[in-house]
Each structure stands twice: as C-alpha cells, then as structure tokens.
Amino acid sequence: MPKGLLTVGGTLDLSQFWPLGESDADTTKLLITVSAGAFQFQSSKSAAPQPTRAFDGAWVKGAGGKKAVIDKKNRITVRLQGIDAPELHYAPAPLTKKTGVTPEMRAALKAVNHKYRQHWGQSAAKALLDMLSTLGHGPLDCTFVTAADHPTDVCDKYGRCVGDVVVEAGGKKININRWVLAEGWAAPSFYNSMTKPEITVLAKLAAKAQAAGKGIWPDYSAKVGAFNFNLRYTAGKQTPGFETGDDRGALIMPKLYRRQTTWACYKKAGIAANTFAQYLKALNERFYLTADYLASGAGAPWQKLGAFVKASQFTLDPGAMVLEEAESTLYSAAGQPVTAW
Image (cartoon, rainbow, N blue to C red):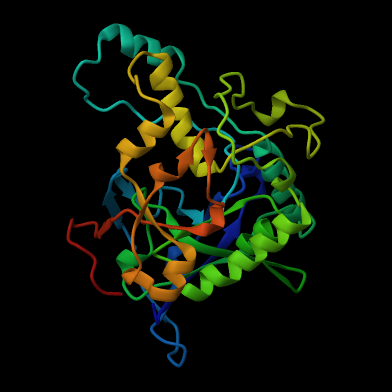
C-alpha cells in the first residue's frame, strides 16, 4: 500500500462539461500552475509536503503512445479514480495492422466509425455540471489527490493522472469521485493500482446508491443486448432544453459497452466474425474478484473477463471486479525514466 501522497493544486473550468463542452462525468481537465509549486509530494503522513518538479516536461509511454502529462495550456488530464460513468462519446478502437483486412472492410469500418453514447451519458455529465455550478460559475479551486510512492505510479497508459479531485468553494469541500458514485451517476470501476481502503469506501457508496435506485441504477442491465448504432454523441448546443433523465434507457457496464462498440463496428464491417462473448475471450483481459483482492491482494487468483458473459448476460456486478491496470512508464523531457520526486 502506498505511503506517499501527491497533491496538485489548480482550478476546474466548468465550461468543459457537457452540455457546455464535451467532458463527461469521469474524465476532466484540471488547470494547474506549475511555477507556483502546484505539485506537492508527502512521503508519509508524518512528513511535510515538499514541492516536486518531477512532472515538468514529463511524458508517458504506454499503450496510448507518447503523451505529455502537462499540456501546452498548463493542464493535466485527470481520470477520476474508481468510477466509470456512462459513455458520452466513444469511438471504436483503431484498427491495427490485421492480416486479411481488405480495403473494402476498412472502408466499411470508416463508414461506422462514429462517436457513440450510452443512455444516461448526457444526464450524468449534466448532473455533475449542475452540482458544481451551485458552488460558483467561474473556475473552481480544486486539488487533485492520489496515493503514490513513485512518480510513475501517478499516470495511466494514456498520460492521464489517476486519482481524486476535491473542489473547494464557499467553505465547502466536495470529493467529485465520491459524489458521482453516491448520487448514482457512475458504476464503480476498481483497479489493482488502488489501495484497499480506497476500494472499500467507494464500494460502500456505490452499493448504497444502487440499493436506493439513484441515478443510472434503475436502468442498469446485466443483459448485453444488440448494439444501438443510432445512439451517437450530440453536442449540447444541438440539444437545447435538455433535462436530466431525457436520455434515459437501458445501459450495460460502461467498460463492457466500450468493448461492445468496437466489436459491433468490426462485425458490421466484416472484420470480426465471432460473437461478442468470443471477442471478449480473445482479448484475454483479467481481473480479481473484489472480495478475493481485499482478502489476499496480489495473491488472489486472476479471473478472465470473457468467462462471465453467458447467454448474453454479464454475470458480475461492476463492483465485484478489480481490474488490471495497464503498465506505463514516465519519462523526463530528456527521455530518461523518472525515478525520483
């Protein structure tokens, strides 16, 4: 379990969230000022926080390619840890160099290569925006927080910083991750990069929201139905007067939906000939059962995602899984691995 804590002070621009912008309810932009010592690392609870410049010019090398941690506008992209909101705009995964894929197949895939959305994706984003707007309409002061012992622990394979965001206004402090789960606007999504206390707290919030039928939960379904090609991303300006709940309808676990999107588009283009269950098995993705992980940590037995889709049903609740975090490596501007704060 990490003993250290990284915090990043900054501001949160509300105009990025749908329907004002394109951000959904689990990924956001945190504006930071590096020169003011925004990054602070605390090696233990008893240690004093110290400024760190480990992320100046740093970039991540992972499955997502080379991604700068701090962009040209002095922002970091945050993946809100432990939550998975309904998809607002997900496009099928890019086609790699696959043998046997004809030009006709590639053209067919291009024809269906759109940004797709789930039911409740718009509502979840708007609910978050509405809550944040009660705290103020300008950029809100906020802090990004993540448990980490090494700089490379902070970012995922896409260069996103993974952790919690706490907004501060009018004497109030609200942890966005916990608020979204507690109000039922996202499913829990645990990774083995998280600590056991983090998983336990979020699991309780999600279970309580699910039991109370908040947010998305009345329409959550274990049944993996036919993919709806008509549900596509729509900009907020094209949906005037949208109210929370206007996009209601059945939805599956967002992680599963993302894989279904890619499979369905490949299938329609003639690239994939297998069933969705067979596609999942071929991906060979693994996870721990949450109960096993909390009891035994990394010593728990691995499970395979594809083994839990049976007769078009996904047989596990989202909170029952602790997924495997893909590896990433943090490099300095000079191209050397970042190993110290």
